[in-house]
Amino acid sequence: MADEKALTIDTAKKVVAQVDDADTLLVGAGIRSNVGPLAIKPEANSTAAILLTNAAGTTLASVDTTNGRAFIGGASVPTARLHVGAGAAAANSGAVKLTSGTILTVPEAGSLEYDGTWYLTNGSGTRSPISLGTFGDNFQNVAAEATTTTTSAVFQSKVTLTTPALTGTYRVAFYCEIASGTANTRAQARLFNSTDATELCFSETRMSLANLFACATGFQYVTFTGAAKSFIVQFASQGGVATVSCRRARIEFWRVS
Image (cartoon, rainbow, N blue to C red):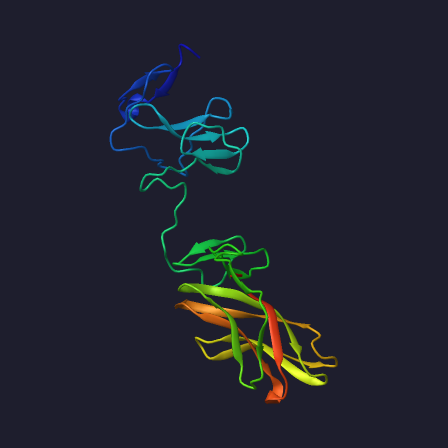
């Protein structure tokens, strides 16, 4: 095709250019199709059949017409229907960005949306928010191994964990070992949210033998809305009738959503 013209405009249409295969076609305001869609068709399919470059000739995007794939962000051969190049550390250099806007009134399967919160809709049409926190974030723990005693029916504090200001849902768990100095009396333990004055977990054990330690444990989910909270393992003697001991107390705390 070396001698053929890549572009010929009939004289009836006022010929403005004839372009050989090796030439570059220069266009003013743009190109448009007068009938139907505008098609860009390569002579032969390849993995880089269509290239979009900047003024210096650097490839910005490429189309693989062999496999029906496109790459944005350079000259790499795409390995997915839409393949995006790596981002960079500089401002405005992220690989992909969505502008916050109104999400779909009716969720559509496969949709990724963003209105300040990320959402993903599954194949059943169920939209769910995408948590940007990692499971296990902000893990904290505290322990008090030594034995402490009380004869009070009023709960006594054994160990305290105070969090920073947080948002999200967290799992708060406690463990301790309690015993009573008198057989057939009851020892109590609990996990208490002192910030909100809320009892999260409660355990009461009837001790058939004196000074025999039993485990008290439990957990609860707590929602944070931007403030810090304090959690305490506490223990008491039910009715104040015996000496109750508490040891190996601990609190563990981590994010779940």
